[in-house]
Image: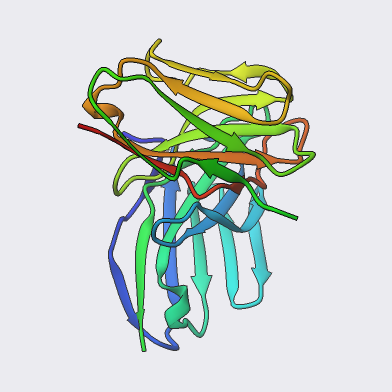
Amino acid sequence: QKEVEQDPGPLSVPEGAIVSLNCTYSNSAFQYFMWYRQYSRKGPELLMYTYSSGNKEDGRFTAQVDKSSKYISLFIRDSQPSDSATYLCAMSGTGGFKTIFGAGTRLFVKA
Amino acid sequence: GAGVSQSPRYKVAKRGQDVALRCDPISGHVSLFWYQQALGQGPEFLTYFQNEAQLDKSGLPSDRFFAERPEGSVSTLKIQRTQQEDSAVYLCASSARREGPSYEQYFGPGTRLTVT
C-alpha cells in the first residue's frame, strides 16, 4: 500500500461546477499538506499548503485536512476550463526533507 | 526573477549510454530536490541538497544514479549505463527554506528522458 493514495480520475465537470479532489494517507507523522497543479509538459506549481488540521482558503480554492481520518481535500469553486490540469497532493513530516506525492488526479473542465 | 530551469528539455539515449541532466535553481535558494516522474504518476523523491551538501539520497534507485551540486547552485543528475526503466521525466525543485520540510518548492519544467 502506498503512503499516499489519490484517485487518478479522470474527472470531467462542466464549467462553473464545484470540484472536490481528495487524498488519503497512512503516515501519521505527516504535518504539512500541499496541493500542486501540473499542466501537461510542465512542472508542478504549488497552489497552497496547510499545516496540521483545519481549513485554508485562497480565492476559489479551499484546502481541508482531517488528520483523525488521514484525509485531505481540495475544493475548487466556479471551476474554469483553465483549471483543467493534473492536481497532485503532497505531504511531509516535520523531521525531514522528503515530500511524498500522490499519483495525481486529472481534471477536465468543459466550457 | 527567473524560475527554475532545466536542460536539456528532452533527451533520447540508447541503452547503456551515460546522461547528464542540469538544473539551475532560483537564485539564492539553498534547498534543491530531484524527483523522477513516471507517466501517469506523481513525482518520486530522488535526492536533496542543502547548499552543496547532499543530505538525503535515499530515493536514488541504484548506484547508477549520481547527483552533485559542487558550488551550492547548479546541480547535475547523472545516470550511468541507462536502462529502459530509467525513461521518465526528471524534475528539479528549489526552495528558500533552510531547515525542516520544504513545503514551498518551485519546480522546473523537467527533462523528459527516453531510453531506447
